[in-house]
Amino acid sequence: MKKGIFFALLFGALFLLFLSMLVFYSDTWVDRERKDAENLRLSKFASIRDDVAMDLMGLLEINSVYLFRNSSHATIAINETLPISSPNAQLLAYKNFIEGEYAQKQNLAGKILLSLDTIYASPFVYFGGVNLNYSYSGVGKDSSIFRGSPSVEKYSLLLQSASVDPFSECGWESQAAGGLEVEIKIIASNCPAQLASLDPLSESRFFVNTTSGKYLNMSFGQIGADAYSLRMVSDGVAVNSLLNVTVSATQPIAAWLPGKLEFVGDFTYSTLIIAEN
Amino acid sequence: MRGIFFSIDAILALLLALSISALIMNTSSRLQATTIADSQLQKIADDSLVSMDKSGVLGSSVVANSAIPLKEFARIIPGNVCYRIAIYPQSLSTPMIAQENCACRTYSISRRSFVLPEPGTAIYLAEMRACYKGTSG
Image: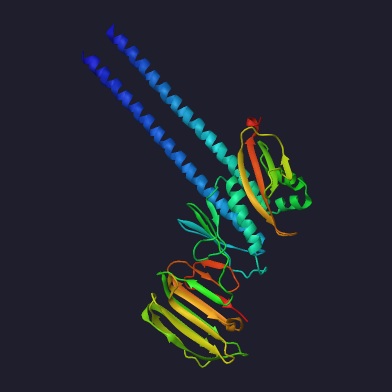
């Protein structure tokens, strides 16, 4: 009787041992499958991003692109003046190809969307899950926008007036105090350096005029739907001037520059020349 | 007598349990090997297309309207891999250029687009199918 109980317990223990082995192997297998699928998905998105970036370099006849990626999306950015003045026809054909035939053959039908017209409303290319942004600026040639975010701490601007058309006057049109630091230095003019703390949630405006009557207007703070932003509008004065903009921010922000494509990237303590004589 | 019966019973149970676990492990490792092989094939196909795109082999084939650049490139593909590389003009389902060493029944597939700006912007789709020679049909 005792032996019987012993064997029954032994068999029970063996059964449990093998059952737990089975469960362990099954779990390991499912986990491995899930990881493989995730790796494949990430690898595929990286491959598509690389593919699109290469194509854009060919289409727009540029030498380099920048690829950024965070946990939610990937961005293709360009910091190069386009050798072709109007790339929209090529981009439109490419958009149709990527959204249609390409997406379908990559088993991503409906998941790759391109938008050419509204730079604020939608990124140019994005994938569900891993987004891919690319945008051609629809903003007028003389308008530059740094689309801010609460991560922006300071805008530093350095303006060099052209000798043929020097700056004649400058000043604040409107100013609202707050926590957004703004520093403006103007070389070769009688305009004093400006250092202000502005309200990032309302618009403050600064102007610079030239002797020929041309102007450069700057708005800080709330620009349209975007707070913490900087917009510069000129009637051509910037073409003859050198303007450096340094954005101090804890996160990357986007900028749309005159005559250039969207630049989305890490502007933290970086300097950018946006117009050159 | 009862002891012998229990001993045989225990041995049989142990053998049965061992066979089941061996079967599970064997199936598991075989499936894993298949997954690794598929993954390797996919990588070979992806890498080949990326290399051909970036080195201009795909563009050269289109410009020359010839599979020779593809054939030259394919020398670096491992010898135990069957492949078919085809280039499709945009919107066409028939390849304009194709190069293969043997046919595949089941295969890993990779696709990559490329553009040729001159003369006139044209978009193409390159496709590579790959399988191991033992599995080709």
